[in-house]
Amino acid sequence: LCDEVFGEENFVAEIIWKKKNVVQNDAKYFSTDHEYLLCYTKNIINLKFNLLLRTKEQESKYSNPDNDPRGDWSSVALQAKSGKNSYQITFSNGVFWEPTEGTYPRLSKESLIKAYDQGRLWFGKTGKNKPRLKKYLSEIKEGVVSNTVWLNEIVGSTQLGKENLKTLLNANAFETPKPIDYIIKMLTLSSDPNSLILDFFSGSATTAHAVMQLNAEDEGNRKFIMVQIPEEIDPKKSKAAYDFCVNELKQEPVITTIGKERIKRAASKIKQENKSNTIDLGSKLFKIK
Image 1 (tube, helix red, strand yellow):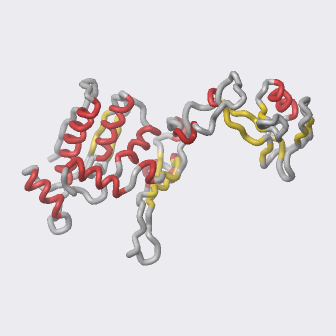
Image 2 (cartoon, helix red, strand yellow):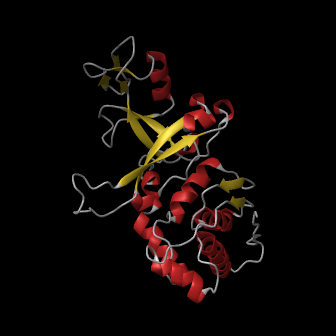
């Protein structure tokens, strides 16, 4: 269906979200703890993704044990799995190097000598180990490309999404809300500070919450459009949600009531946490009759 709507040529990636952090022992064969996020673009030729900020763990891989004036660096092996020509070399410091069997030099001989002359090779603390090529933090991209496996430790789980919404509304009003960080990661990769974000099946309005939260974090001016039919809540299937709408809010027991209230309370919470009047947290409600 997605290929029909967006075009097969505009498929970008299939992302796996590990949405659970517990095993369901009542499962018949396997405990399914993931779901798929299909990523398409309107025009693959014009697609541009943002980079993610490096984590503290990624940053920790860079250091400067030899006080290199170019700053922190990490290192990679001088051999690669593929290539054409091989060679041996003895550097002027007396260290002999050749690629291990079944591999090829990462650099041409001329480029390797140039790297040595520029102090871009690391021979270990003794200065006599097999050399490795330095990769400087200052010379690489300012961020990292996203992988296709999103762990719940990073973007949250279904349980966390449910707990966060319950805390915000003081009611167990929605069974399967997405965690905020899950949506924020999507927005971080694909939006700019002035983007218009559309969620055509908004449910509990996690996307609206995520947009406001991200704007508060990076001073963006993203706007959102949430679309949701006023689906009635069956008190037999979801008594907590029904009671929340009817008894607490004194409003119609439909999904849109929950989403509308979430947007209102999330905006108030974000405003209190940031203590700023510069963040636009307003919203309007439109009904189609």
